[in-house]
Length: 168
Image (cartoon, rainbow, N blue to C red; front, side, top):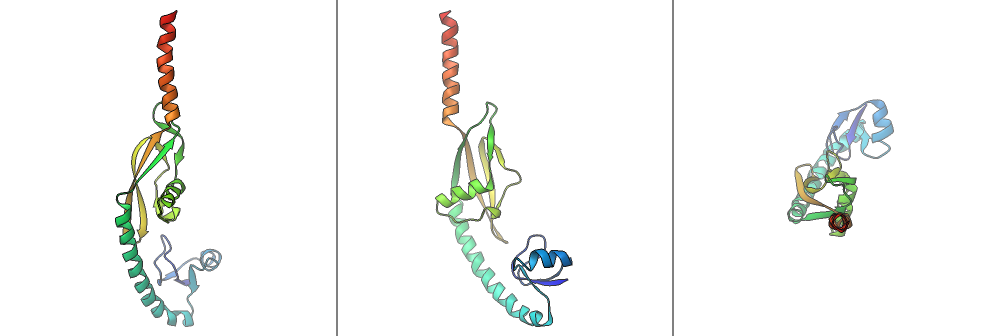
């Protein structure tokens, strides 16, 4: 089945491309989600208009993405999570957490644009890529700190333990 893509689809093509896909993928995924049109003679006549409109839209989106990139570069996101003694987190920091933190700072970024190989599961500084446009990728610094209550409890236990042994 040949389809004309209305949106960029990962590992398939960009907006306005005519691609050949499996019948089931086209009928059950692309067409119902309005990601593509069936490539009929009438739709192929419209493809040139779609490509020119897509090129203009892509150009404006790229300019907006570059402006957003300039705003995102100095941003440092800080998360406080409970962690074990070795620095491993009880849980993780996911792309949804990063998107929510960016939203609190005034950036409306979809969590699917945030690329993490795996969820962040350790304390320290990490760098996360955000794909703003197919040609523009921002890198945001993420700092994961241990919970202050865990550190305070560990420090209190360390102080109390020697005091008890000396009293005996």
